[in-house]
Image (cartoon, rainbow, N blue to C red; front, side, top):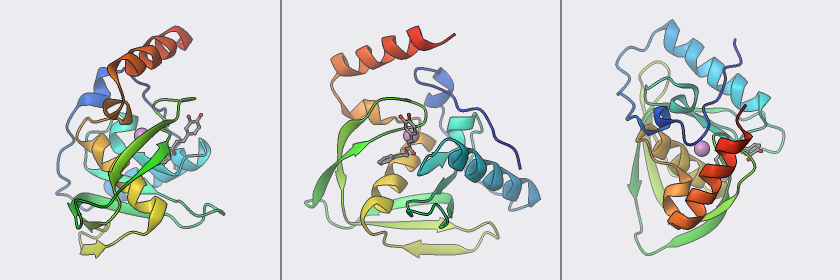
Length: 166
Ligand code: QAP
Ligand code: CO
């Protein structure tokens, strides 16, 4: 169990495409543990391996009030069930600390993924979990929530974060 450090936008590592997980071994379980521990430490509700510089397709989430309902998704795949139904949500990101921006995403999605044993699963998440899983799966494809906002706003966030960096 290790708290890892989180990469901050605009670190180019955040733009890498993560590789499919093929080995469901103890190293994968410890990676999942580290992701959860790091997410809880920094008071997050979701974290992707990309954000700690590990380019493997695994994400974690916990949207419960008590932060005691961890979800682990290996090789998540999102299918939009209804293209018309979309909703805006003020999203944050541990890699973009201090900034919240509205992102519009599909509301009805199905997530196919594997668990830590490699078993195939499927869920249709409700509410915030669906938003978080889409946000985190974007990270695995090198995509960030700031890619959904205007380039003027994105540049402003970029320069503020670069100035904060010591
Ligand atoms: C993704 O993000 C998410 O700026 C997860 O200072 C969040 O957990 C998707 C955080 C909201 C949809 C809605 C951000 C913590 C946590 C910050 C997070 C901060 C401290 C972000
Ligand atoms: Co994020």
